[in-house]
Amino acid sequence: MDNISEESAARRRELKEHLARFNCRVHQAGDPPFFTREPKPDMQSVHWRWSDLQPLLERIGHEVDLAAAGPRRTLRLHNPGLAVGTTHTFWGSIQVILPGEVATAHRHSASALRFIMKGQGAWTTVEGECYPMAEGDLVLTPAWTWHDHVHKGDEPMVWLDVLDISLMKSMEATFFEPYAGDVQPVHTLPDSSWRAFGSGLMRPPGAKPATVNPLLAYPFGMAETALNAAAGLPADPCDDVILEYQNPTDGSPAMRTLGMQLQLLRAGFNGQRRRHTGSKLYYVVRGQGVTTVEQERYEWSQGDFMVIAPWAWHQHQNNTSQDAMLWQVNDLPTLKLLHYFREEFQP
Image (cartoon, rainbow, N blue to C red):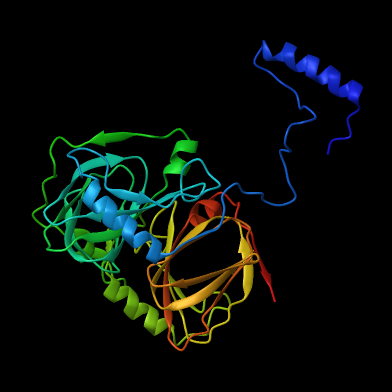
């Protein structure tokens, strides 16, 4: 609390009224502090259970139309500590697309990604490149790229959409443009970036580092194979076996503002407790486990989501007899580029 006398506070209130006429102000006794000893985020850590989400998704699949040139059919993972958004920097939404539907083409200044949760048979086209989407695949939509989705399969598909909307809006950099038609034309060679960089091991001679990742699709089969190979390495004390999706031209995170990781929590793993700046959203690909956030236990299973608030102590455990797999998206690339990332560990 400020050590300001009542007389001084009264003078400041009078001064405040005078300064307001000139769009100026001074600190008042009741103003919240500009600086705190550590982060005090408004966003909260939250656990969403698949058993609760599944009937909601079925309902919006029946009751919400996917209108031409309209918004996607999505169930937003809303954070109760915020007016909008899943975290203070990004939105996570679960999209449902039915057989025969088209999510029409548009582009926006927000960076976006899709992690496929259920189903197969949908294709996404990004800047003329076209890729099939199946469970566990990661598909990127870099900022200001045309993109549309067409479902050619027989069953509903469900995937997670993540966009750095809150970060974009805080910087007043919102732009959106619908495409002239429902879908964009597909290039004669529809998977050129995959042919050039998809191996993850080799690339064309002379390829220069690219700040915008040219690779648009990360199939689950390759990611799982890499993760299983990494299981032979020493375990990470907090995350057990964990790998990050990367930009193949320079090894940086796959997106400039959002980081994606896949991890394996093996049976019996008891992780170290830690906290850090930045926020992250987990999706349980398979298995069961417990994540303790501050004093609250999230007992999760396949299909669940968890979001961890900045600077919250958290710890992963897998006390079952089966391995568990988590997929994660976070805003750590932004924090690290701005030199705002800080991390602490507890023994």
